[in-house]
Length: 133
Image (cartoon, rainbow, N blue to C red; front, side, top):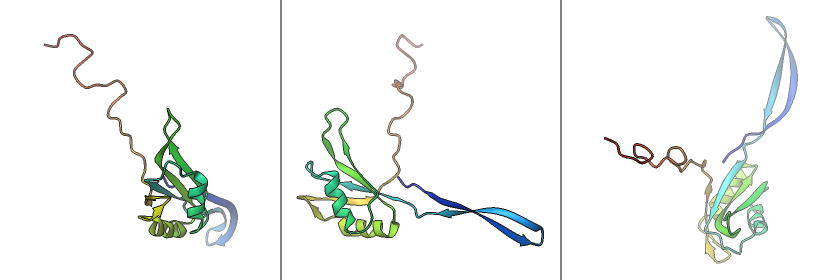
């Protein structure tokens, strides 16, 4: 969902009570915000979504999720914006609005959770058939 990016590294030399000390400073860039956009029209393209969100700031990436078998859009996607302030504005302005004939749901994307319980092929029970006494 959210990724942190480190900027440049600068070496700094400091003279203090303990003598000459070298240390590195890391410049932390702003956190990229991943935005969920749901209830999209099947005709919506990534370019359409990019243009809509670009009205609120810089858009880093846009992805519309497609069915892995048919390749058809599944009606939702994700937009990444490098500025959290711009992203929050976009979320507030776009959530619940009509976009290409659909009222869309827009919010900060949540971390994906593992929907499968247990190991693959684990169907519960006590074993692989046979009788258990």
